[in-house]
Image (cartoon, rainbow over all chains, first blue to last red; front, side, top):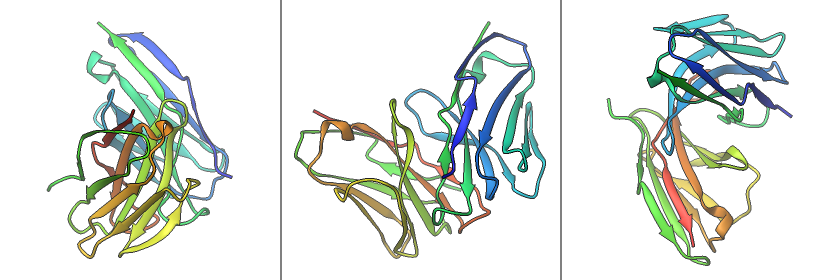
Length: 114
Length: 113
């Protein structure tokens, strides 16, 4: 059974720091891994999608890597800003378990203070 | 292009009632999935529809059901509401299956009193 774990559960940092959020999954048979951002009480905003054949994806100050063999992904946020404060979720799309089913981690709650 | 639209945004219902939530996917997306998000359980998969057929279902009781119409719009129904059904219900659409990403709507916040 696929399980996704995110570390740390919460993070509070001063503005300007570079951050690394970690995600691990137990079964490497995945189509892709996706990082989302969620603001309180809101829906999910897709940040980066990494296909299983890819090693990393970049968008602006965000960079996500994928090591499928070790079951790990990291989200790197450069020069953090208060506007980055949110919960960050990673999710995998597994081969097994049926169609179009995402398995989510519990998230990392990030607070960036001025 | 328009994103995933969920209606209503907020809903308050009484125990024992039933509720229907609606989701309109991105134009051209044929797959619609539903998720329940609670503080205790996080995000959990409810079911997925593709071309009007339910292809996958999560571990939820039969009170939770859904359907998809020919225009790919989907509805989710919860009957005999319980207090524990209070949650944020999120809908996601995808182009097809497997290697495509997902776009989520803003969700429907259901409160059962």
